[in-house]
Structure formats: structure tokens, C-alpha cells
Image 1 (spheres, rainbow, N blue to C red):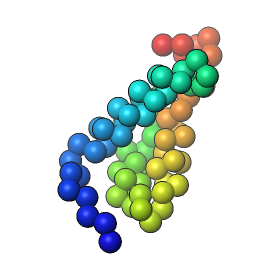
Image 2 (image 1 turned 120 degrees about the horizontal axis):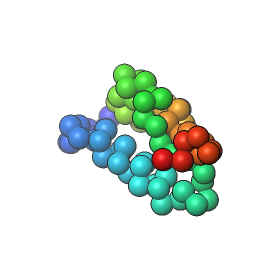
Image 3 (image 1 turned 180 degrees about the vertical axis):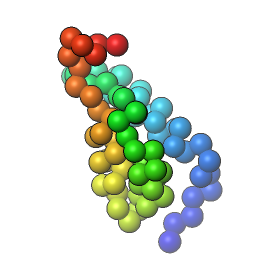
Image 4 (image 1 turned 45 degrees about the horizontal axis):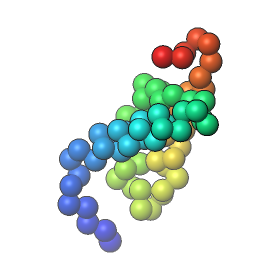
Length: 74
């Protein structure tokens, strides 16, 4: 069993970390993040069950990765 002392704010922290990560590697990874593509409830569940099913968070994150092209450069 794992106890996590700071449940509130972790979702925002993870989203900001992922945003910075993608921004940092944007020259090598031609993607942007679009969190509207994610299922908020599934993302929260993935965070809750991250120790049992770590791939759940990966799957939700992959939904938010949108390839850059001439139509969505911003």
C-alpha cells in the first residue's frame, strides 16, 4: 500500500510537467498537447490507480498528444 500525502494539486502538477516536457522536446517531437482530447474522469482514475495500472496514465496522455501540422501550429 502506498500513501500519497498531497492528493490535491497533483493533476495540475502532472499536466504542467507534461506541457513543459513536450514544449522542451518540441523540436524533436512534432506534437502539442490538447487536454480536451483526454477523458477527465479517466485521467483522474489513472492517477488514482497509477501503482496498479501505470499504463492507464500513459494511455490518457497519448490521447492529448496531437501531431503538429500546418493547421494546428499554435
